[in-house]
Image (cartoon, rainbow, N blue to C red; front, side):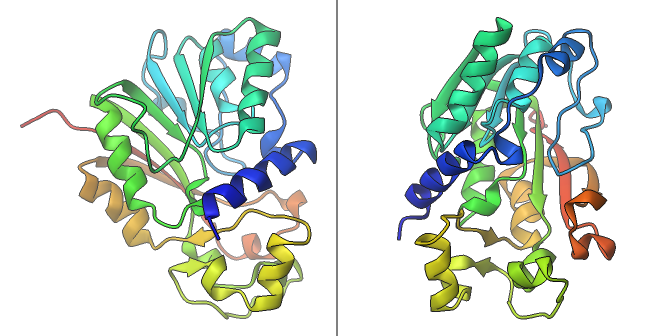
Amino acid sequence: MDPRSHNRAAWNKKVNERDRWTVPVSPDAVERARQGELRILLTPTKPVPMAWLPILQGTRTLCLASGGGQQGPLLAAAGAVVTVFDNSPRQLEQDRFVASREGLAIETVEGDMADLSSFADATFELIVHPCSNCFVPAVRPVWRECFRVLKRGGTLLAGFVNPVRYIFNADQIRNGNLEVCHTIPYSDLRDLDGGELQRLVVGPVEPLEFGHTLNDQIGGQLDAGFLLTSVYEDHYAETDGDPLSLYIDSFMATRAIKPHPA
């Protein structure tokens, strides 16, 4: 099975279902961003600190695996020159919808987050990469490509899932049964039994997920050449009914820079 093709179809379907990560931002949110009140998410609930962002006016910005009409339009409204790159055509449609509604200039490009060959070296000054690399089998190629397309002194803002979530079965988490049953790194393709995987890919189609180690998530950024400057953790909101969030923050966000040569 090709994870990229499957996940493209699954996220297209989520747009039709109005999944929370596919619903475009409101006109009010866009207007607030125009006025300097920018609120974007890398993880479920905590907004990115304004101190993490460079001056956005005219800043070439890549919203990586970030379709859905959310981060991209807000950054464009705040003055950034935005390209949204995503695997799902329907998610990219959401960004074009908001751009048309609000009179924003946004470029959209479809592709694999681990292959940014459509962009030249040192194209961008800012990369915004919300929790999405759990949908690709390997994350280190993503960090290497981010480093390549970012200019020296540029900033990478990334959200990702703490692999602790993947030691539990997702259905069991929803039912409050926090029994350890998987090893890390995790893969739906390898670790789900035949019946569970069949329901995932044939029944109500859901994206395939992969739980990457912190060595690959954080160490992978460092090995690609980034310098880590800040970190925060996050969890689902109380209204999401996620039992694991009662015990641990299971999402992380990092700010890293591509250093100038010594």
